[in-house]
Length: 130
Image (cartoon, rainbow, N blue to C red; front, side, top):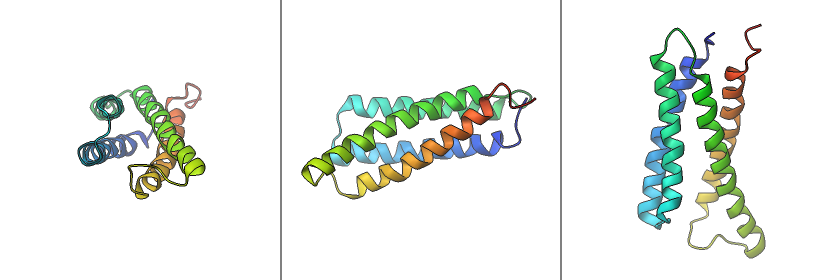
């Protein structure tokens, strides 16, 4: 059964995917992150696009599983990115080669990904409709 919040959440997911793509591409071009790090972000973006499109395309059923997979992957990726920088900041007082705003952006996006993952897991819960 499809939840009333799935459609707006799918639109939010698509919007986030496009924003993530723009931000990651800018970061990759300007700060020169390694290609494997960029590719893993593209995988997260691809999952978000699949989840959002499948959810909007299937009007009778639900694509909440796709959304949960996308947000779970994005949360894990963001968690690792944030806390590796946080550890550097704690041990050396700086994150070398990056402006300070990067860890701040990652902190905000980590919170968004965590909340979105919880919402997507609620949507995908098999007992939700009972």
